[in-house]
Image (cartoon, rainbow, N blue to C red; front, side, top):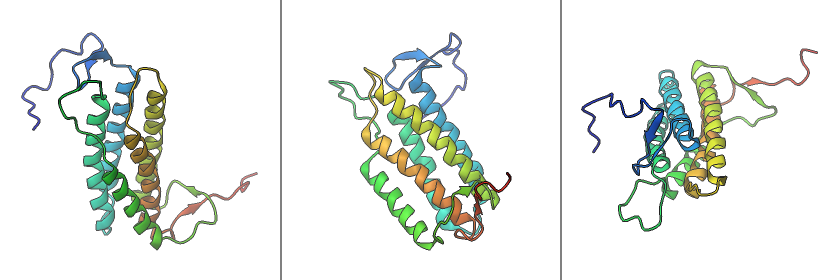
Length: 191
């Protein structure tokens, strides 16, 4: 259980922050940027949920995803190390499978795409598209971190993030009357 008695500690006044392992890193460190971007995504999902009325399935999934994003942040802020004896919170294959099942369930109701979709339509869809782009940025940071020598990022976490952006895309379409209200790209329309 997390207990936060003090909100400010002054420990970061020097531009450093602690990972979950206790290791200190600069606040601009790529690992810190990655989990900070997932935090930004979580905030964007909180806003999107304000507009999901009428779609309890999407709202419930987003609530689960928000919790998953805290799991993901815990996973990222405490990279695995050799000889570690304390079990850490990690993203699991079950979380990936659940996202895949939710994608399939939503996608089955959607009208087929005949063009790329522009972000927009309903307020919920617009916010979910914004969340999707934040998710893609966070994914790029996580993959960049994974490619760095000496850095460790779970393959399951990377898979989860890739599925999450797909989920956010189909959820945005679901919030646009199951795709009927999608705003479609019209190539060259304004030439």
